Length: 155
Image 1 (cartoon, one colour):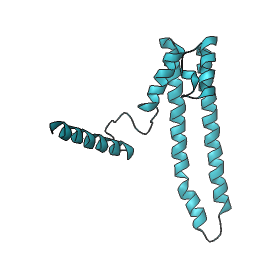
Image 2 (cartoon, one colour):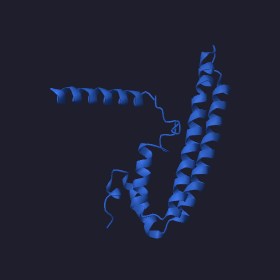
Image 3 (cartoon, one colour):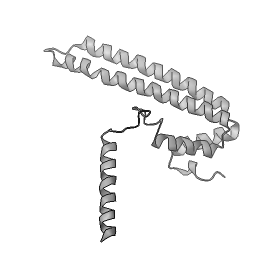
């Protein structure tokens, strides 16, 4: 009987924890909205670094590159969310305000262009820091995906 009660209490606690996480209520102040920096994304990055057999110096460069790219993506996401009001007001008018919609698209193009430049710069840093064997492994992993054969044993 005690085991049944204990199991039920554990299940209720797990359910409450999962529901809190699903709705974004967490108490870790470092986490912010950058899910990759902490949590599940960090697990995949650690696994990738182990798979590539990187040195501490290489790990530092790769971690900084990943963090920089994801911070830029986070900023872009904020910018894209901020334009919903502009689109809504353009649609709300009696006639579609094409100029306002075009301006939103131009802002999006600028943000995407900036993210592309930052990503290319960071990819170049990672490429420079890896040796030929590590680049081949990374290319295989990227080609097959995180759950493909790339994370298995390397031949």
